Image (cartoon, rainbow, N blue to C red; front, side, top):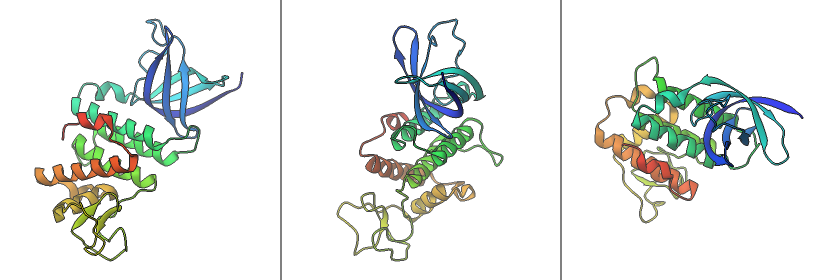
Length: 246
């Protein structure tokens, strides 16, 4: 039976039969995969807790008729242990893996950028960075903005998303792709505070020094805009986003 291996982040699992599970992962070289972990629900399973959502693992697969079979799993980063003990991190992590699952729609299509972004975001969510801790909500917003940008829906926070007129501009429209000038402004556009747009731009570009000491109102408005923008481009709301503490 042919085999192959890849490193991956576990996105979700669901039961199969009496003792098995179907594991959905985002892998580095093979994109999104669904595979069977046989006997994983038994107490004697060789997999233990290594195939839980958020975990980054090195997997070996045996090619099957309909679904491949996971034959070996080695933990690279046990993110599920840390995130499971902190509600804010746990819910933010679920929103991340749900987003990755939705944005990478086709199985086995290369998605290296999505994999690297998700793995890095979960790592920061779990252990922070050298320049200090960051709030789970802000890490999530940065991930969401970058993920939709990789998928081809990068928002504009300075120049007009419709006509390209140099900004800054004061109106924001998810349907238009970001900020818009007055002639291009569609009905229903919001008018975020200038500081909010500056924060969103910093989160998208990864300029973390510009995200420090932000007023709560600015952070909250940025989260609201991010959630609305992502929901528009995914055609529906993220179920897990409703549980994230903002």
